Image 1: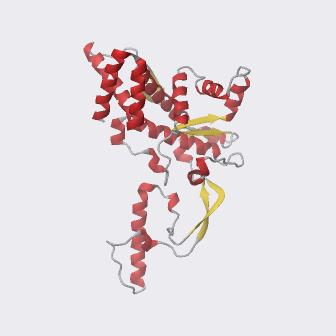
Image 2: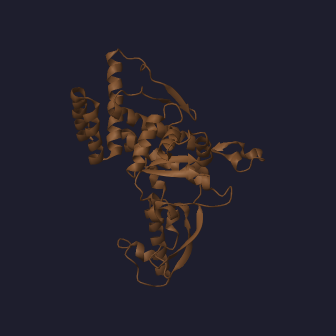
Image 3: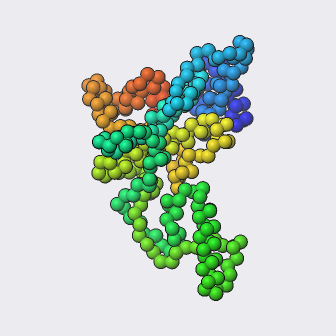
Amino acid sequence: MTDIHAKLAKIEELRGALGDGPADAALDALRRELGAADVDAALVARRQRQILIDQRAEGGGAISGSPVTVVQGDQHNHPPAPSSAAEARAYALREYLRALSATCRTVQMGDLDDKEALFSETMRPDQVYVGLNVMRTVEEDEDQPAIDMARVPQRQQPVIQRVLGWFSDSIARLRGEREPDMRRITARDILRRGTRTRQLMALEALLRAPGRRLMLLGEPGGGKSTLVKYLALVLADANLRMLDPAERQTTPDPLDAIVEWDLGRPLPILIVLRDLAAFLASAPVGQNRLSAFEAFLGREPGKPAAAKVLLRALDEHRALIMFDG
């Protein structure tokens, strides 16, 4: 990270001497070299450090121009919008992810049954989300665990395997068989023999889908919207964690909750189709689809900069778009 900060300092010197164009080009090259998430995190950290320096130079006190927002009862202090184009993009991305996380953080239980007063409260998606099965099945051979490890969070799998190993040891003793060496026990020692067929979970189906494209069909109330809301929340929080070096050191990765996730850390784009349809119906005649989509993403105040960041991420295969409806 120190190397990133040193290179960013040189780019800022270049900006002062040659202007935004060459500096932004150098920044783009750095993002490709070291990774967009790490560079954006460094940009945000530099901005926050400069704010603190300015504040101390003024003799302390509140940060001038720093808006305060309240999300689910928690107060968040946001630094003023940055001045350079690169910092503006990093700032816009951070604010977009915060807003998406806040939007997806609650599920209105009345959506399940609007006739029951019991369901008038709100809950977090991780409190109500359960693995959603799809109709597609998969046949597993004898090398698969006796329990469905796909339903076990990755960080808990070693514990489960140790427990299964203990049972294998106990059964071997009851049968009078040779006592296994627990130091050498492997996953293969605790596997079921034969084959079995089971339904895929929705997120498994996404990971196995050709081109990572998946259409999920089902009856109303089947959990489709909850699934995309849960996935958008996990990805938003995972990306926010990468933008905050301190949080990266102290909090677990939200993506650990998704077993066998191998899509990296794409930026989540959640589109409610009824909102998109209503927007396009009022779009200017003759407007091309890309321009209309960018306008839709940036339709709220302060969002145009985030829309450009998201479109760029889509173009670079660094985003996951989810259509709900």
